[in-house]
Image (cartoon, rainbow, N blue to C red):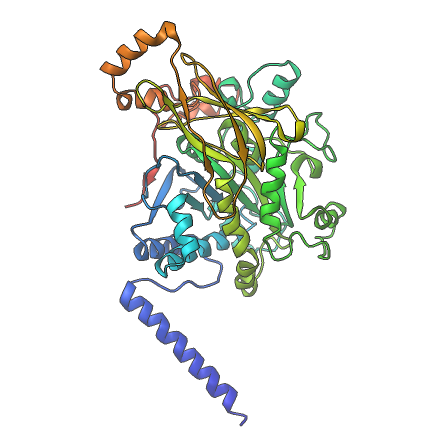
Length: 510
């Protein structure tokens, strides 16, 4: 009898070994292991996923490497990898921005493995998610910081946080909050895609930052989140206070209702992020998060400048959260599988939120061709309100647009120069795990432009004008060849922005 447990352990070990070799022999890939994957193993996991699911996945690298030359890898899942598809929202997760905050890195590697595995097994929810959404996963934005944190034991609160130039990447993005706050004070009617108003940078941009900015400008993301560690809370914009106060100042965006809903969509599907009974991470702010449903406004917690979250919202159509995944920045290997189970439902549920609200196509009523760069403006009239949401989004590509909204009644107006505005009354009822309600907008050309308009469209098909029309704002695309002298922080942004055709996709890994 005393030998039986040991014998059973031997049998279990043999069974696991057999499964390991079966997987290796039949697929040429290794089964996923819960461990801290190094930078080489990270790529191997992504390649294994791509080998198993070549029809729905693609690995690509961003335009810049890390300071030490490590490629910045991403993997996407879609029924048409490598292409934006009309009416299919684009979603992204980015992890390991701070190199010593590592749980998100491992969660995204497992998420990639899980999406592939469950898709092959015919899981109806995963198949529906991949069919309706283009999903981008970046396990590590700061592989150099991860390496330093790991080499020094992974237990220091700061070592490995920054990139290899000792720059905190979450303070390195252009500060567009100051621009929007100034616009508000001066009653300037410009509330979105604010890069064209940026004339100077506070500090040189790091290569990792440049790569992410270019990604944001190239792919029309609708929703995203970036992962951190050190607390357990879903953080939403704005991260920077209007007054400059360092903490305890709630800085609401025009989409505050939607952002609170998005944050709750993650916290309430996490094992205990939203539980009022859970313990905090040791400070006063952390202890109150659980009583707030596991969510917080960024500036209310503490104000920061140059963050990636707010940059997404103010430079593009993308709504982004910052997800703090736990008190321990570098958790031991033994808890990784349990952390996956604690986060799995929330990770998947949050991706589905890219289908909140409405989507549709803005098109020319005469030619039936899509109109990129049309402005979508929202007025909330729910329950007798009459509130303009002073953050407009724009149509992309072939005129498709995506507007995240909570349940309610809205007046939605689409307009663009040369066309008559078109307003529709829309009642939004969000259904779980379903695509957004479709609301299209045919726009009529202004009478004085009709003759010129028809002439141009009869003799210049839409696709010939694609590149010029796709640009959301003049000079919003990042130059594909960054000059070294841009390191002078006083250089004008306009000298760095792309005037020519943007690169529409990052470079693929063959």
